[in-house]
Length: 83
Image 1 (cartoon, rainbow, N blue to C red):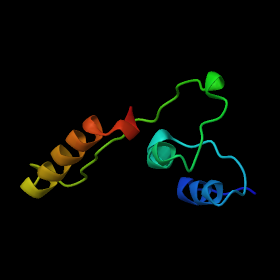
Image 2 (image 1 turned 120 degrees about the horizontal axis):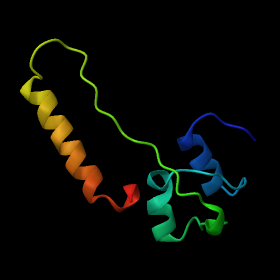
Image 3 (image 1 turned 180 degrees about the vertical axis):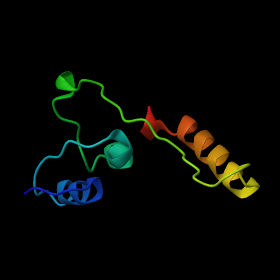
């Protein structure tokens, strides 16, 4: 089965439909619970995708946007799923 998003691939793997190549953030909790098992780890190239926060407004960044970006940066830095 071929799908075009990680959440669908994760759900299919959880249902036992097959295997999936997904980012750790998609599957960290399921691996910790034992409902998914990592396969072929020795072939994992350690690739990663950067996360960007982009504000397209003009002038200064509004406080609510800055607070959200700071919160997300802190959360990602502390989350084991993004390591």
